[in-house]
Image (tube, rainbow over all chains, first blue to last red; front, side, top):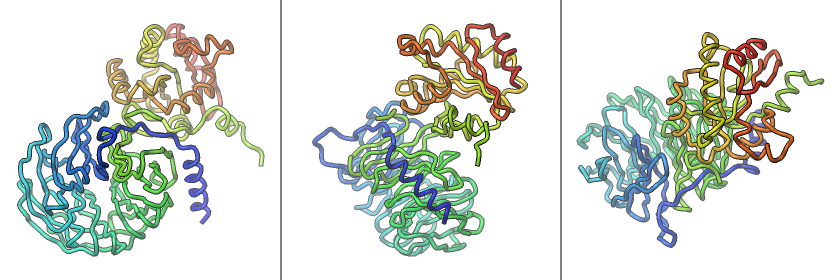
Length: 301
Length: 171
């Protein structure tokens, strides 16, 4: 209790004096908002899905400069894996494989209803179908190898080296699937609205959107190791090798948590920050309401 | 309960601001980089054309002279005074071009935190004109043994041998 109170004080202090991260707009002023929530890093560029503009925008990870825009219907998730950029098309219920150099469509593969998240186990692509309560395992050519039923509304995925973890957003749970054969190894309680997952090498972290907190689960057995308050709207989560970065859509902030759950830093972002990714040096996050990305690579404001 | 002198020094001079290393890590200045260590600080910025390159070359030699301890209990930190322009990628490139080895980190922090750190670490001149000149701050080196509470400063224009000798006094 004492620890939770101390954390709340830290969070409150951070909210009061947070320095703003540099921000870059994804479209010219006056354009219809693109509502970006998802982004990915390909080694050189950050790719940002703008679902309401039916595009994926590519920007330089070193300068934030625009480096291309590619048409994909209602892109809901993006992932760089298996030497390609994969985009989940939530209107056509498919995943689209793009060439990372030129953004050329290399293939389109049907998946379940409303694909909302993707992760790779190094050899395969896993897709969470939030509308049909399943995850699918595809090979690099888009062939479907497995379909596994999940609890309600799988919205986020993470890979721990051997297993795929699924955040069941509506069911308030997290599932652990063995990557080799999709066997369900366990289902563990989460908070209200688990929306993002991250693996730190030992533990699985869960961002609970409506509970406004993150949970730490031991990856080995799913045991709950701690719950740490952040802020309402915990929508995105990333591990940078040392710290966990959690976005808050309600406070327009991103928090850096240490692995003991204490708040290390709080930065102001654009409006309604969702997913966050780490590029090896900087964090990047997609601001859904301001149609922009914020990053530690872009200085401060 | 009375505060220990070590705690008093920490509170007054060693803030726990968040810094970003040239390796892309985010760290707390005191907790992660200073606590329980012997540390050497200097300020610099990549567009600085006079003092900084000379200081960095001197510190390269200091690094060589102290090499057995560097990265074990002795750590060197070069902090940019121009974090808006000196990105992690630019700092990493600079570190590589100087052959910076483990135990020596180039750091950047938010501008307000950078200014706080500069003042807390005493890279300040009482002459406002001198204080406004960034390159003047690059001409000094602060070093100390945090657990033993031994702190000192030396001019970066001293020879590498003299600087290394001064640092050895606090080890």
